[in-house]
Image 1 (cartoon, one colour):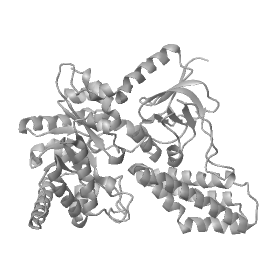
Image 2 (cartoon, one colour; image 1 turned 135 degrees about the vertical axis):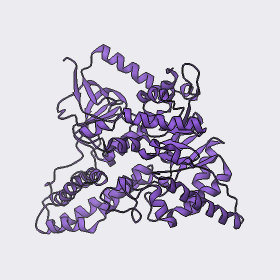
Image 3 (cartoon, rainbow, N blue to C red; image 1 turned 90 degrees about the vertical axis):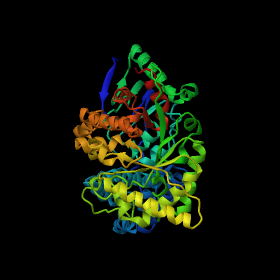
Length: 531
């Protein structure tokens, strides 16, 4: 068989080389049972209970992102309306599986057709729930065990988040989906774990044998020629710098010897590996939402303070930059954000929401002020679009600092910088000179500059990828302003974690990159060959 390439959509970067293995379908035949209605209802209740228990156990051991997704599934399984619809169908004589599938079908369609990407992403979660319960009805277990060889590239039509989390990705190579989407929760989980993923490949029925999954460019290579295999093995070995202690430990310097600071983005401190932190120049972005999501109510001040102090202790004198609560847009928080907003990315989010809800913001401010006496803490305000927002935030920090000191509590005012996400900041940076430092959030800056949603697919997704000349001009403006004023300017969005973009960023004058921990090695390697 000659070498063939099948194109899809890149969803999580990386290279996998190994045998193609079809992952057994997680769903089950929906009409297998034919008992009386009471027995069918009892079987459904038992299957739902078993599924909820499994999901709760997965959530308990998961990081923040996975926990949020799994807890939504647990809540959905406890929705009386969902069960009532299935129960009504069972009472009318339908088998439990058919009744459950029908009850979920309408919900899946409704979520899948929603205007907001946040809700569209939930359609895959609901299909995952459907299949997990159906598996218990048919097999007594969500998934029939399957022997998977080490390094396998798994093939499936689509895959639910809970099934993805149940697989041992330390042994497996990557994932090739016939359907799926780069904006799904599955894709988010794959990116967080560094699992190569390509979606939208179309039918792969009957395809077997050795293959290459190029998840950077979005295709699978069937029956690769020897020279193709050799080339990809070499590329994968180069990417192995991510886990090479020697490569990680070396300071990031260009070929000409110029030092570039490489810091880490932290989504969940529990998942931060100490050796990666030790190999970095500090923490350039702490997404403080990890303390808020998945809770019934916002965390208390003491809980937040202890979390920040733990990060400062781990950083051992290096900077720790905490972004204040950044919810809204694609990160709604029940009871806080506004679900009725037609365009939440342009609505009440980030610093706008925090200033609007000071009862939510003040405890975080106090926690940061108290933690600041314990190390090199800096604070960053997200989604700033107007200088008045910096002034208003500073007034709130000053008032809380005075209150803490009046109460005899140790506190200090950290440097306060801003995220550069809105083009208005990068076009006229001198208007925002009250900020102590700047960090460019490339994801939002790209989407707002090009009017291309960061979570879109197809043609729109292609607009939002790469370093567009207009975006490059805005980054250069910020670098020039930083050079003129002596203020730090870094890049902390996904662009900073892309080896292919590092050269362009360095050419623009960027000398501070805050990257995904898993990308630290390859970013240092990309810096080393530049200049």
